[in-house]
Amino acid sequence: MSSEVPPGREHLYINVEPAEHPVAAAQEADASDAAQRYTRCIIRGPLFGIAAQEEGGGHRWQVLAPVTCGYPQDARDRLNSALWFRAKDDTDDRAVRREFLAAVARLETETVDEVTAAGTRYRVVRCEEIVYSDGDGPEPPRPTDPEPVVRDWELGTRDPEIDLGFVIDHIAAASVMEASERLALMGLHYRSPRYPAAVRADSRRALRTHAGTVLLPTGYRVLERTATGWQPASAVLPSPHAARRALVHILTWLWPATSALQGAELPEARRAGYERAAAEFRAAGDANAARLDDGRELRLVRMRRLVRIGPDGPEGPRPSDEEENGEGPTRIHPAMDEDGTITYED
Image (cartoon, rainbow, N blue to C red; front, side, top):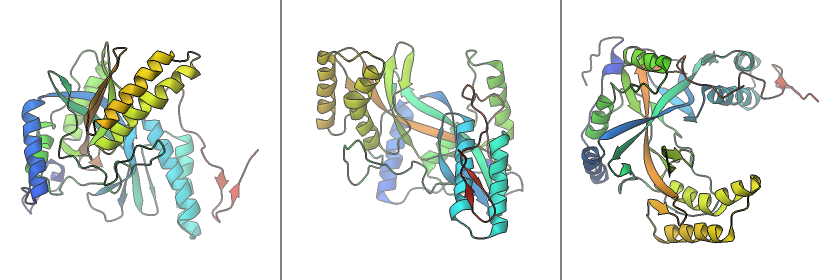
């Protein structure tokens, strides 16, 4: 990238640095092979999270809450909670605490996607979750995708947050394949008439207002094949093994528990079939799919998340983005004063 970037155009530049480390070179080769095989790009829909820009931080935005929320209000509520705890735990300065609490008060009563407190801008950021596919279905994890050092199968294992420490920085160096992917996705938008007209219009408008692109860390999901396509069976997870662990727990715990809650215990033969499929999947080590005796199919899928960038940073929620029914701004935590005294109500 040129060292002299025209002001206001920085978000349109991509800084490319060829991979030199052998591991990075292997990942580049993997990405090149995948780009030739998985040529279809499917938009799964938007996800939302929180990013912060420190005073004087330039164009860099630090992700504070993973960009995995299904609705904008979920992310606003996370921001509400994060700022309340900053007021409670991160300062003894009454003036700073007042700023945090003023931002919390706004988030309790207004539908706002950005607030400023103590010199830091906090923004709800939006990404598009996408998956690449070929004639056989969605792309699975790649051989060079990073895995945790210890691969355990315990239900209570807490994986690192997927976006932990990630900085949205469109000028940061990118590999050749990542730069190519970002360039190819610049024109991505909703086109199908099955989307509402307002959604399509907002998507086209974003091509102008937020023309730049940044890719968040790769995520992984368990998807289930249904009559209408592939549907999520898990959250967005940070590694292929985390998704494999989730698949085993779907079969051995989630589906049986869900059936019981719905008042329909799984037949013993079906439960045994699920447990057998889970055991075979686990024994296979790096398997990416499980096909069950009752015809159901679960598959590990590699997900990409694209943040659009404008002159003022990452894109926030669009007017046409859906909210969960009945959800809006609300008080989440007890009242606190500038001295940090918390008042609990009955």
